[in-house]
Length: 192
Picture 1 (cartoon, rainbow, N blue to C red):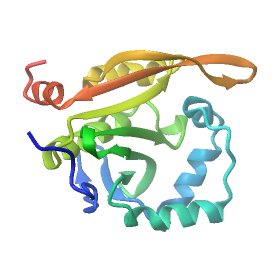
Picture 2 (picture 1 turned 60 degrees about the vertical axis):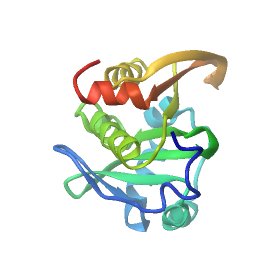
Picture 3 (picture 1 turned 180 degrees about the vertical axis):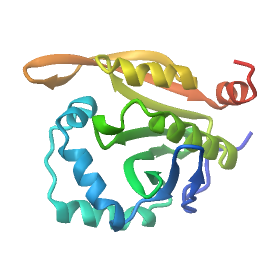
Picture 4 (picture 1 turned 180 degrees about the horizontal axis):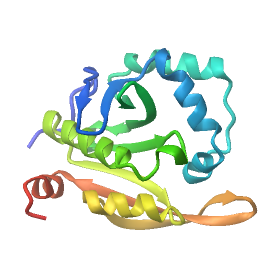
């Protein structure tokens, strides 16, 4: 078993194709979709995002994502339309671990299977081309749709951060979930 990850496990920014979506390295050409996403009230609530963003900040952000070998930022494309992003970040190289984050542009694309397929594609890439052992995420307890998708894919609930989000005067827990390489391998072979 390898001792930690190489310095830049995500130096190569792949394009990953599925039946519904294609994942492409994010760039300035995707900024209008990102602006739609971070401006949508439902998306902001589901992701717990209190921040507001200037379009120029977002352009600069997406223009530099390809420069980071320790993270993988991919645009979720349905045909030629940007419908969200999926990100592997917070790399913990010595422990072969990272975080997964996903956001869709809003309710008009929810429920179409885009997020599920995007996560499956990025997990296949991460576990198929790097020695990563663990991919974790956090999801707010009220986001039942996302929790269902994560469980269906193979993520396991590991704990709860109590009162992690204050939204509209109410506290909400964050559910911590993770999938391990052997769990993903078993699920991808139909053994889970």
